[in-house]
Amino acid sequence: MSKQYLTLHTIDDAHPSDIFALAPTSTQVLSASGSSSIRIYSTTDPEFPLVQTLEGAHPLGIHHLATAKESPKAASAGFEGKVKAWGSDESGEWRLEGEIVDQNKPGDVWAIALSADGQYLASSSINGKVNVWSLNKAEGFPKIREYETKGSFGLCVDLSQDGRFTASGHENGSIYVFNNDTGRLSHSLAGLVSPIRTVSFSPASKLLAAAGDARIIALYDVNSGEQVANFTGHSGWVLTLDWSATGEYLLSGSHDSKAKVWRIETRSCVATHSHGDKPLWTAKWLPRNVRSEMFALGGGNNAISFYREAAG
Image 1 (tube, helix red, strand yellow):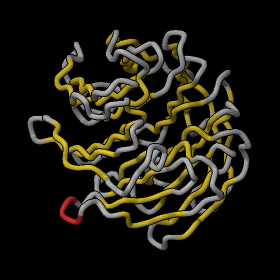
Image 2 (spheres, rainbow, N blue to C red):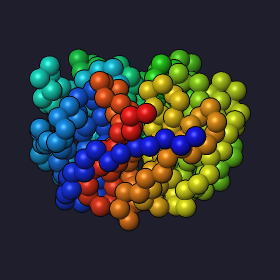
Image 3 (cartoon, rainbow, N blue to C red):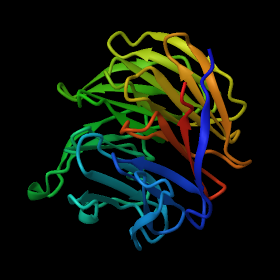
Image 4 (cartoon, one colour):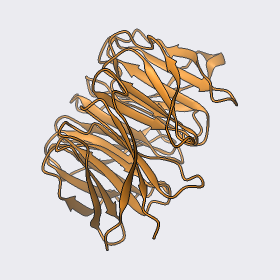
């Protein structure tokens, strides 16, 4: 059974270059690109207006951006090698809370992910190391976990919503799941030999989705490490994955410019949407408010498009 999604609004020229990351909150979407600023758009107004710009956040551009699901916290990673922590007040205004400074050189921190409560940040690196940091400002954002892998570039990372697990995907096709409670490797997952560009835990932290250059989306059981499903349909590298709040659907975006919605229960694609003719770097569900299910897409055409589920 397919699902219908309607284009709600498109912000053309949302950024002057490729949009690499979208990060939603309950009322806004933060966006980042190859330019130096973070732009924040309202998702409660039907026109999706620009409400704030964090000018010069990262001088060489921003490759990753993350928000916490249950806390007004965000983090950004720039091409110059810095990671910045941001917080917002009740009015929705964002401000800089600090930087993770650990003699980071460009590439020491690549992908980033935040825990649901915004207390922890996981990062991957060009040398394969996976780190977890406390975002306790009073303690100066200390590193609390350092996981060694086989040294292949960590292209992506995710933290489970319950904070128990960190997952990383690497250029050599490796996928690792670490237990943050014990500080040990839980699973080294087999199955995809090409570079892994995106990993994402389900909301209940029971499944891990992973994808990349093999154009296949693999689903793994987090507890057993078993591969439980494969989704195929993209004709280009899969660059981004995001679970709906209930865990019923998985949203994917690809170098083939298409976004797909997959129903987990039936292991099937239920919707496909094109986002211009450039790579689709980021696809994110928006938190459920009063409106029906919505997601946002960003990529190489410098635009952000918003879609909502057609009323059944």
